[in-house]
Length: 259
Length: 158
Image (cartoon, rainbow over all chains, first blue to last red; front, side, top):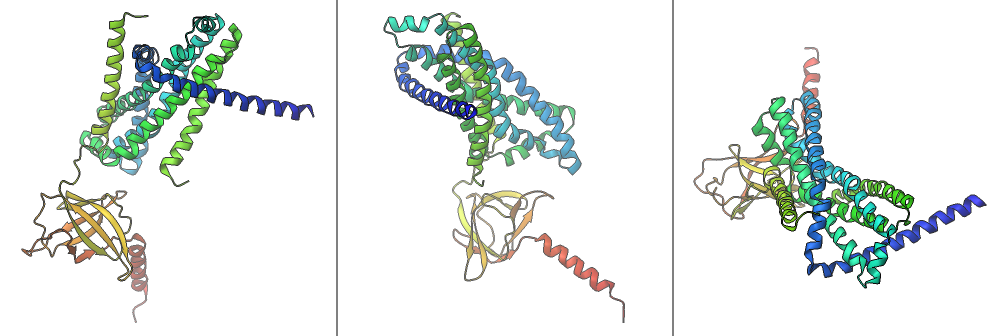
């Protein structure tokens, strides 16, 4: 009997939390309009979540591209179609790995930092202080961070894919001797701008919204103690990663359209 | 926090790099540069079997891409497939008695249409139909034929 009650409690709690998170998102989005007048706040956050995440994105992108080059070559050469290496590298990066790996890294690097920052502000009662001064913390603090994340994510994903293609080129053409012309021409024949590249951009935009939403909500909703902030940061990374992987399946199924 | 100018510089660089990366993906990786058919004209061809031909497949003459397939429909009177092609305006002089073949690029490649020019001095215009066509190679039929030939060879001479 107790187990069932616990189960019910868990379900009610999570539904209630989801509802609060949705109300919060609504508040953030409606609060974002006021930022058009104070866009500098958003620029600051693009720096914090975008520019500071750049290094890990670029390094991972390069290595993912290089690994794809090596693995792809070893498989393709068995079928005598090593020339399709460019196509394989570009499609895997643009359609899947670019948006997904970028979002996972973003959740780990920028999302956790956002949660910790906002959670700490709450714990030190800075949010309450702002309200005392009749400043809405959601418009002043949360909305710029949310917009910054949404702007930064597609750009980061594009950089990841682009440098990954260069990494694949480095290994495939530079090291393994795939013909450079075939590498690029097969890629250009097979990668469609609307079906593949825009699909990746839409994915990363959705991931940007979801990851930043989870990060700012967890921070805003954190229990204002050191332990509470720690577990909120932890939850941000776990929930964001799970949401990204789950949504990736849904988005892929939607765009391919034959599930 | 950094000074405003430095911060703006970094954010500017970041956004520019991101947009540049998108542009590189669009033009260098994607096929956005292959300027699609410019003021093209439409020609049609009926095939008994189009195999795996798809819309957007290439139309070539002598191996050079001159256009794209824009539509594949079924003609329920003739039980044939009608393939509509958009040929680039700069390739005007395709003889009316040309042959359209459905070919396959490489072993695993896509199917495309290869036009073999004929000898007539009347050229194809917008809306014309290529009468001489050769269907796609259906691998199963081919294998069946080989097996049939082998079987008839194996019969003992009388």
